[in-house]
Image (cartoon, rainbow, N blue to C red):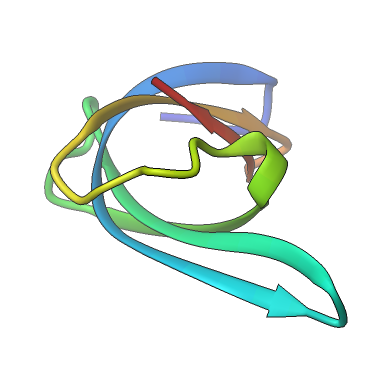
Length: 74
């Protein structure tokens, strides 16, 4: 699977860790995609681009641009 082109793919959340960097809120999200369920990926997205009550085990849609996770939605 190539993540270089902008795309949105299905995934399952494995871990969620909110954090604050110099007053800005982010969320570190670890997930496995539907295409590669045995390979975990971790990305940091702005809290505004991720549901506030995201929990492990949830099915989500993840947006990638140039291979970088930029948003998570239900």
